[in-house]
Image (cartoon, rainbow, N blue to C red; front, top):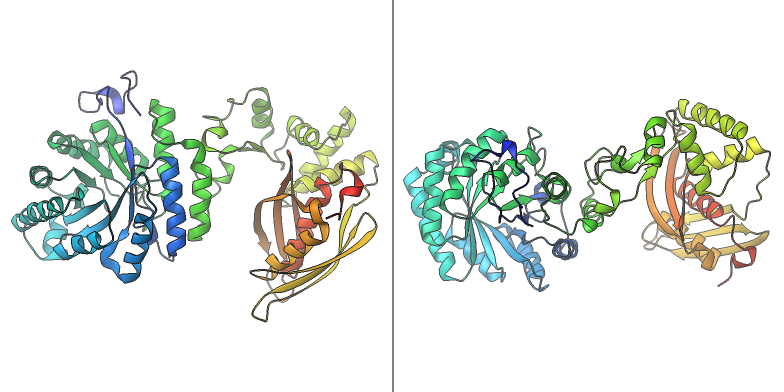
Length: 516
């Protein structure tokens, strides 16, 4: 967590050179600012799960919510404070005494006290004066301090405020007993230059935080500029979720500090699991091209890139995927080359000669050029055809029924397992869940495989709409991706899962299938 002085930020000028003993921590506001993203609403249990994960990854301060929102929010904050986390748990509080009282009722460790800083907010939004804001800060910080709270004062819209006044606010907050003052780029309009100018002045008065948004695509740059200028606590959200273009991403700042400046802040190997947890809970998927956590971040298709990566892991990657709990993926498409195709075949234990490899590469490219995503199953099917091999299926879906009209969704399946018919039924959270459960029940121990990913790849329009489901499943040290299409998403899902299991079980002893 310490700078050793060998690296510099933004040129290493006197203004931007951090002291050699500087440390950087995070205040995560996923549960408050992140939840303000349109359409996002987290349950109390989801917030508790995310809070635990944030604590596990090493976040220093967790803003659990805004106690003034209502009774439901206060119950949720209380649930987080009851977890006994190592992190400091806080509530957002407006510049009114009652907000602090409500936060105290939730047993939080501290508050982020938010007051207007720009004239636009002071005069138009709140209808007050600069002097009154200063007086309010002094009064409320002293009140919170008297009640034993950790206090961060934040000047809202600080990036568009008069810097002399912003500095006056910070000085007042520190003199009244605040633990720190936060520079807030509330609308994501600041440049790194403006950020350095503001934070460097604020840091002269005491511990300083920074709160940046990504409206100009400068969230990470401004967070780094803040650290360079003296800030030691960065506000962020997991996956950058938040209002408008979002807050700065926790994982992106952590990795930028680690890889760019050798500054350790979090247990980065837990970041991918944390990002997936938040994406699933919020219903906001990770963009495939997102830095650090996106599906494509460590995925290679280009023949040149794949060949280079196979020769040297670092050839086309800035850092190992394991750093953030990821794995490298080589995928096949129209840009695939011989090295990538051969490596994919080797992963599935398929040996080919040079002539066969050339033909397989040609067919893979032709398949991809028709707009189809080339899965492991597609590759293996092509290889079987080129080599003239007949593959005997070990598991095949014969038929299935699913019903979701009642209180409990149910499904039944009939499978051919090594020539023997297997039947099973199950219930689930929905028809797909029930059908997949039934298939697993029919297969017994053979279905002991993990579903790594599941998504609807494409849906055609019209009355004859067809849905394509893609799944990735793993069993032991092997994994496979498969797609299946059908007018019924439940049928497509089960067929894809069964086909994936069939591929995974291809080299295992037949007697294992269907046994309990």
